Amino acid sequence: DRRFNPDKISSGLTQAIAWFAGLGLQSKPRDRLYQALDTARKFERIVRLYGETGQMPVEVAPSVQAIVEALEFYLIHEAFCSGSVVDNVLKQKLAHTLSGPSSPLLENQTNSVGRNIMFELAIAAEWKMRNMSVEIGEPDVRLNLDKSAFLVECKRPLSEHSVRANIKDAAEQLATKLSSQDGFGTIAISLTRLINPGNIASVAPAEVRRTALDADIIALRRSHPEWRRITFHPKVAALLFHLRMPWLGKGLIDYLSVNQYVTAGSEKRGYDILKKNFSDTAANFPKLPY
Image (tube, rainbow, N blue to C red):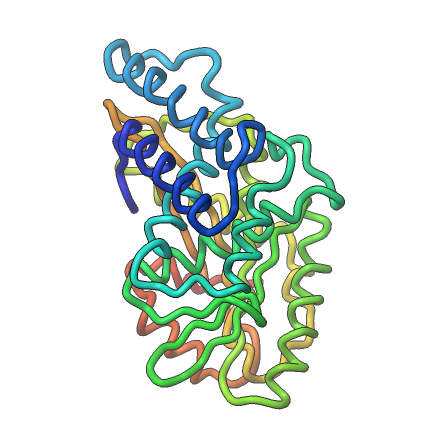
């Protein structure tokens, strides 16, 4: 969980634009990084008004998902701009993040690459900012924990009905890789677009926010038992269901990133390593019937 002053986000995104330019990736006024900066600047006024009046401005709902994306750009810059070598693979992925429509509501299978890669880099940034060792490339992310490599395939389905196909595709990709190399597999599934497609504003009290998001993920998982009816390679340690949401506070944006890990393959050692390293809250590893 992180809390941000909106002008800090604007400042960070200005630095991100300069960082991209230094990598030869010139951000342009109509691309997603500039749009993220524009969103952050608008949110400075929205958060200020909400803090002063307690009233949600009418235009905030369509902007909520946009501020998630602004925060993702901010965190990716913060995680990778210093102390890291930006190789050609990471550079190519950063270039892709600039592409795509202004709103996820306008997304389809032909123009979603930018946001899909953004999910890969944002989840890697979260781990890197926890001082974990991450590598970007093939697979999408390689996470090193307790002298074990976790090969992470990231999927960002466009609808509930495509989640199973995404999981199955990732499971097949990992089965091929794990048959020829050591380590474990993890399938990271973003549910952010499914739970908040970009038109929901969030103002719940701070004490119930994480509980509410955990409940949203659980409800979605329980309504789709077919997501688990897939054959996994024994060393696929877990399915990781991931959700990001911003909440407006008094002069601040409270940014929550919620994860739930569910066992997948039959070998449990990888799952135990994940549980040891990511057990910040019990809800990360819920025990649920299917």
